[in-house]
Image (cartoon, rainbow over all chains, first blue to last red; front, side):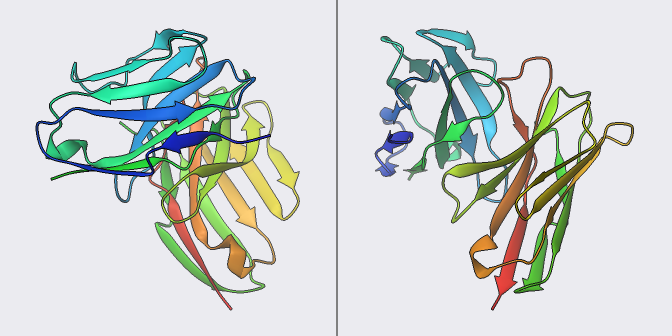
Length: 112
Length: 111
């Protein structure tokens, strides 16, 4: 079946704007994760969903970041009042349970 | 903050040679995984080793884990041009969902 997909693949926005990044996980996967990766670094954990609920949002950097998964499948990561430091590749992953995660291709966010 | 550190940061080898990279981590783990990333986009899971295992093989990959030294190594044998990528180790503690990645090793395989 299809893997994890993310849209858009690239997003350019201006400082102060609001953005939404979408993740479509593998259909039977209950767990969904968001990570952020900056140049030359590994991904950093942001948030983890089990079903519809955010089981762990300890990685969200501040209250400008919020994520939802209302029906337990598609998830949206929302960033308010974007700052240049938010520029990164945002990666989504899903899993059926257990430690192995399946990653999407990421959304490259550039804040000008 | 990142748990793991990979060594070396970059590695350039000839096709057919072996590539070895190392990962050190700081806190106790439940398992350690290796992922590959091409062109800075999606990661692909390569192999997982649990804290009670010492060595694991998958095709041309061999992973070792030394929990007393808090370190792991990934060996790619008989490298190919298609192995050119960045390789990351990721650790998980008791919360197996929360992966902590190192900064990665960039491997270039020359034809």
